[in-house]
Each structure stands twice: as C-alpha cells, then as structure tokens.
Amino acid sequence: MERVTLGGSAVEVSRICLGTMTFGNQTDEAGGHQQMDMALEAGMTFLDCAEMYPVNPVRRETIGVSEEIIGRWLARTGNRDRVEIATKITGPSQMVRDGAPFDGATVRACIDASLRRLQTDRIDLYQLHWPVRGSYGFRQNWGFDPSGQDKAQTLAHMRDVLEALKEAVAAGKLRAVGLSNESAWGLTRWCDVADAMDAPRMAAIQNEYSPLYRLYDTDLAEVAVNEDVTLLSYSPLAAGLLTGKYAEGALPEGSRAAVDKATGGQGNLGGRKTGRGLKAAAAYGALAAEHGWDVIHMAIAWQLTRPFKVVPIIGATTTDQLRHLIAGLDRDLPDELRRGIERLHRAHPLPY
Image (cartoon, rainbow, N blue to C red; front, side):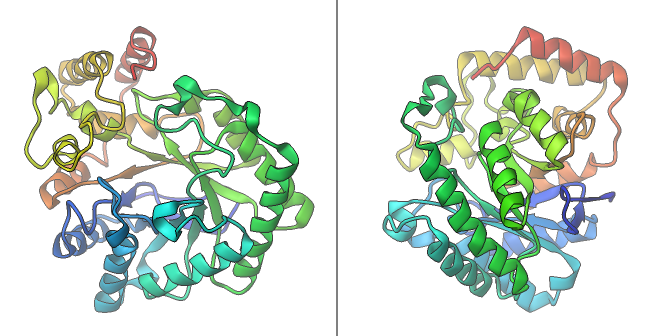
C-alpha cells in the first residue's frame, strides 16, 4: 500500500487508516486483534484510536478499552515498530475525567495514561478530540453559534496546551500532533500560535468527510493546503448509510443504528439517517452499480482523488466487513465516475 507523510511532520503512514472505535464493544478483543492482523497483512499500518473509545455508546466503564486492546495486541505480537498509532485526548468531559479542565496539566497526564494503556513508549500522532470553545461537528452546524467565544481565552488555552505538547515531543513521547472536529479559524490559530512559540505544528486534522458530508471542501481545505495539514477523514461511508443497508427502513441486526437504538439512542446514525440522506445514499449506490463498482470501494477511492492531502479512516465491526473493504483499496477511480459523483453532490448537497 502507498505511504504518505502527515502534513509537515516526519511521520509516514499507510494511505488508508484502520479505525478502532468499536474495539471492546461491537468488536470483541479477539476480533479487534484479527482486524489489526488483517490490516497489517494488507499494508495498512496506521491505526487510529482515542482515550474515550469504544463508542456506540460511550460508557464510563469502557473508556480506554480500545487503547488497551491495541496495547495487548502490540505486546503479544511485537508489532510496535511495524505500525503507526494515533490517539486522542477527549477534552472537557464529565464522563471521561469528571469535568477536569482541559489544560496543559491534563494533557500531560492523559498522554501518560494513553501510553500505559497502549503499552508503548511513543504515540505517532496525538490529537485533540474536540475544541474547548465548541464545534459544529456531528450536525451541530445547523444551530452553530460562536457568539459566546472569547478569543483571548482561546489563545491562552492554545498556548498552555501547546507547551505541554512541546514538552512531550521533546521527551520522545509524541512524534506529531493534530486536531479533530476543528474549524478553519481554529486550525489557523493553532498553527499561528505554534509558530510563535516554536511548538509543534498541527500535522493532521480528523474531521468527518464523505460524499454525503463535504463541509471540509472550502475554507478548511484551503487552510490545510496552505498550512500543510493532512485530513484524516472519519465516517467516509457516512456511518454505513452509503452502503445501502438502511434502505427502505431496514435496520440490520448488529448494525450501528440497531445497537444505538437498543441502548437507548435514536438509531439515526448521529443525525445522518434522514429522508434526504437515504435518498442521496441510494443515488450514489445506483451510480456505483451503473459503473460496475461497489459503492463502498467507490467512496474510499473517491477520497484519494481530492485536491488536498487526505487519509481515509476505514472501520469495520466484523472481519468480513474489513475483508470486503480491503478488497477494493487498490482501485483507481475513473474520471467518468468521479464526474458522476460531482453531479450527485450538486443534486444532493449536505443531505443531513
């Protein structure tokens, strides 16, 4: 598998990343270990995690379990030097650390805690999961209100956190740093403050991106190109909506929506499973079929044609799902199919 460098860092990773957010919940430990074995065999060496994982749902008693599963796999296989590991600090959270402030001291403690759970001496990419000032991620864009933000407070927070990250990089605990669920303004400010402090620059930003959700395409893409930041795109299949498995009201057993509903959630894929979203997903499925493509393989291949640096994060509940994903990772998207995707984007803009 092709390899790329994250932003302006020295961290080289596989072109596709394996997401591990179901490890310890929908995917048991044995299944998680098997998925990492399969990924490595396919040349996919980049693993993404977070201290709050597993999700769907997030529970206090399972926080850190996904990192622990990776750690035990590393200890058992001795594969640490063959993979690149990304993980994240959650930010302010009553569930994760009882609302402790998200400051430099917390960052230092959380880095050490993740290192212990991962059973390693270094993290290749350490990401800030959520901005402290709020985010428009996960459908919050419909009512986003930045009017209560305090710029001076935000910049002071950035300096405090960057000082902690700078120390961790100098100590060899981190190789590169990044963001998640950030905005164009936030990414720009993190880069500017880092430059002023001679602190590590953000090498990556992990935001949602798929044919159905393309908020990244304009201001964020421009910032990322000019500041040399790589997009790590999560939910490239729109949390499974693009697969077509939820068409005509279907709710497959064991699916993300079914599990969410069974545990008290709405079962709407974080706001993605709307009437317009289902209609758009059906259109993309029909386009793929018309060109003899699997819609899953089409969605991933399309990401690699974008005019900015991007590493898609693929996730699977089962090994069969991962095997199917891997089978299409070596295909190049034809120009005619790419143009068809752009036509559908205009016909179905931001369908959820």
